[in-house]
Length: 114
Image 1 (cartoon, rainbow, N blue to C red):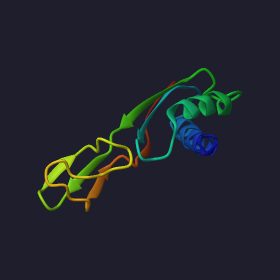
Image 2: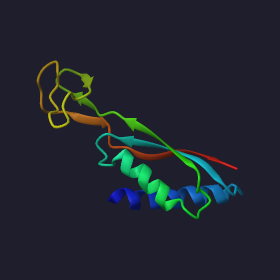
Image 3: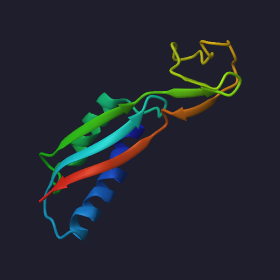
Image 4: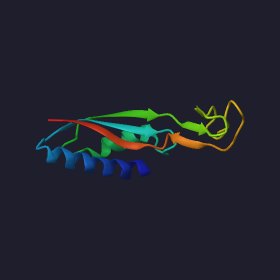
């Protein structure tokens, strides 16, 4: 479960940022997680509950925004969301050569602290 190590690293960053602001409590963490990141949101929530115990983030909430997969077809100059998790075919021209523009994100976007 790589979500635990991911959350441990995220929490380290969050605690460092909180302490740098002379704050003592984290109330909420907001993250953006891409559909292609390999991160399971439910597992990330579980990991969050585990790794925050006994820290300045204990009792905080984790808000996850899922970032959709967006592909770009250079043949017909179109962005599209794949209709199937394993088939990335342009719905307009059928081209299988594409660029992934979003969906791989793993970002800590904001903290609410006091």
